[in-house]
Each structure stands twice: as C-alpha cells, then as structure tokens.
Amino acid sequence: MQCLVAFSPSWHLQVAVVLALALPFLSLSFGYIPAKHELDVAAQLVQANADELDGWEISSLVWAAARLGYRPADHVMGTLLQQVKHILAQPVSSRPAFGAQEASMLVWALAVLHELTPSIWTALLGAIAAAPSESLDEVTLVHLYQAGMFADLDQIDAAPRIAASGDKSQGSASWTGIKVSAAEAPLKEEVQHKLQQLPPGIFDKCQQVYSETAQQAGFDGPYLIELTIMLLLSKVYPCLGSSPAYRRYFHDLRGSDLARARQLTEDPYMLIKFKSEIANRRAQQNNFVRQLGDISRTLKSMGLYHQVQGPVEDGLVHVDIALPDYKLALFLENAHKQQGKEANSSGQADGTTLNGYVANETPGTKQAKLQLLEQLGWKCYSVTWSERGRSEEEKQRLLMQLITKAGQMHTMQGRMNSMVHGTLRTVGDEKSRFQNASVGYHLKRDKQ
Image (cartoon, rainbow, N blue to C red; front, side, top):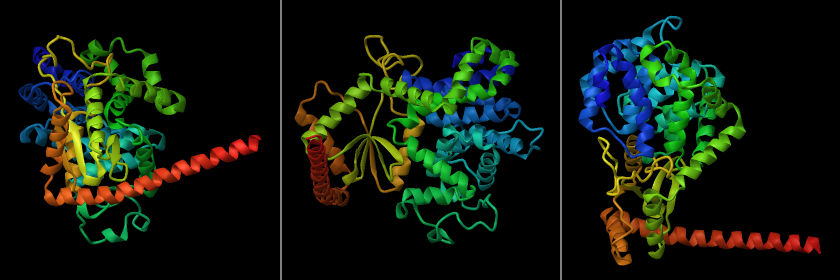
C-alpha cells in the first residue's frame, strides 16, 4: 500500500481503484490482506478527493472494502456516502451513472457494511430496474440477491416500491404491516420482502439465477470475484484508456481480453468452461483443501452427518463445514498474510493461483455469512485446524467441544434432529438403492 503514497495526489484515486480491483482476488489466491493501518491511510487519501469519483470507481472502492472485511472510519464512510448521493442526484444525461453491475456491487457492499439508507437502497435498486435487460447478467443478479440476504431490514424498511402502484403480485401477505425477524421467516421470504421494490420479472429472474449459481460450491468466492473484475473492466475500458494514471496499469490489456470477458456471459459454453477452470483450481491440494478433508474424515468417524462446502438455509448460504442437524457452521480459519509476510516457513506461498486458493471466500463475505446465520439461529465458529501432530482422539475432542459450546439446549435439539433426520436419510438412501436396482433389472430384462 506504500505505493499509493508515492504517487502525486491527483493520482491517488486511480491508484486506489486499481488496488481495490486487485486485493479481493489476492486475498483468495495468496491470502494477502493489507494491515488495517495501511487501509486507513489509503482511505484518508481517497477521502481527500472523493468528490472526483464517478460511479464505477466508488462502487469498486466500497465493494473491495466490504470484500476484505474492512470498514472505513465514520468520517470517511460519510464522505463516500455523500458522493454516492451526489451522483444519484445528477441528471441521467450528465452524471457518471451507476450501471447495473456497479449499482449491484455498491448495494451489496453497503448491505455488508450495514451502511444502507432507504433513499440509497431505493435509488440503487431503481438504477438496476431501469437498466437494459441484457445488462442484468449473472454478476449483477447474484450481488443483488445477496444484498437482499445481508441488508439490515431496519435500514431499508421505509423504502417505497419501484413497481407500479397497482401491482400487487409482489411480496407475501404475511409481511404486510408486520415486522418479522429473520429467525421467524424462511430466508427466501425475507429476501423477497426486502427486494419487493423490484418489478416482479426482475425479482423472479434474480432469484432463479442465484439459485442456479449457488449450486456451485464456492460460487461467491473465486468464481464471482474473477468474473466481477473481468466484466467491470470490459465495461469501463474507455475510461482506463483516457486516464494517464490508469494507462500505466492497463496498457497491456488487449481488446481480445475484453472481448473474452464479455463473451463469458454471452456464450454458455465459455461460461461453463470458465466455471470448470475455477473448480479445478479450487480442488488443488493445498492446506485449505487438505484441512477440510481432514475435518470431514474426523466427523465421519464420530458418526456425525455433515456437508462440506455445501449450501444451507434453502440452499442460499454456503459454509465450509455444516452440521445441519445441530445448526452448527464451521468456517476454516485461514492464515492470511499481511505486509507481504509468507504463510509458511519454507518461504513459499502455499495457495497461489498455481496451487489452488487459500480461502473459499473473502474475509468480508465470510463475516457477512456468519452474521446472517447467527440471526437465523445457527451457531458459527471459526476453526483453526492442523491435520498433523494431533491424534484422532484429540481431533474428535476438539470438534465435540465446539458442539457442546453451542449450549445444552442447542445440543439436545441437534441430537433429536440427528436421530429423526438420520432415520429419514436412511430410508431415502434405501429407496434410492431400490429404485436404481429396479431400473437396472428392467433394462437388463429389456435387453434379453
């Protein structure tokens, strides 16, 4: 981050934006996150010239801060929000407008940072609703749906609807005039309520795209981060070419690179191939993957049903290890590096893009999930795990301590759920085996 101070003040904003686009990816691939005091210095430099930021720049900066789990000081955040309001208040023809992707990135970030207001929420959702339908791509809709998941209902509840006043197809009657806490309503219903300002068609598309994307493990980590950056750069490239500060960083960004980025959302085959590449890199055997596997083996030896990097709560929230019966979520604690320090004694960064990823999601995304799941009645713990130097008994004892730490009532409920759900899962497995055997028998008989 020292490089930011080295540039002239007129370039501070552009250099900060470049770093903002790079740091979330570096936190996943190298585990690198600048120290808080370095981010504080950068934030103050940005604040000094915040009135020069346009829509995509301020979206990138706040989005990166939220992804890194960094909340700027109140006075800095206040200045940034004032610039957001200023941009939104400008005539559409003259202002550096928020496009659909930039608006969705910003509303996601403000939801994670708990900095939303009814007016900003309504204006950003309005920008997305008014955007051309072709701009409502996967990146935009995933960010938008997660904003509905993470947003504080009290911060946006006064916001009016964007849809026509006579349209009553949105929302649920159970919400009318009643404030229902997250723990009392299914997550999908809560998100629908928060996003009820959107026209029905956009919300339906948003929910469908998110449900499909969320089937891929780690979708809101490396996949979403890389795709977001590539698509944003493809849209704002003309701004980069006209700026001396940006040109020095993006002079080698070719038109073919940008064309490939745009084709990712236009060509289903290329998008599938891109997802496959990300999945292959995520599966590389680094410390993160090995530790997840070791925790899973230990839980199996204890006879505890669990999911590894699977979705919970209507399939909407992915966690590293979930014990659904106990409503217990475990997030693997990663040894993030700061100020260039390496994670291991060998001097090699285990987990670069050549060796998979060191994390399943950025720190800010993880923190947002933790807060959401706790509101929904889950017990969430960050786990520091070592597969070496511990006996199997020690590993089992550590995991049992986490389960009992959830509390006696929580643990007793989990054991009851485990007994009931275990029986249902056994019946389901037997039924599947019977159906598969029956199909095999009929196929064999037909061949004869």
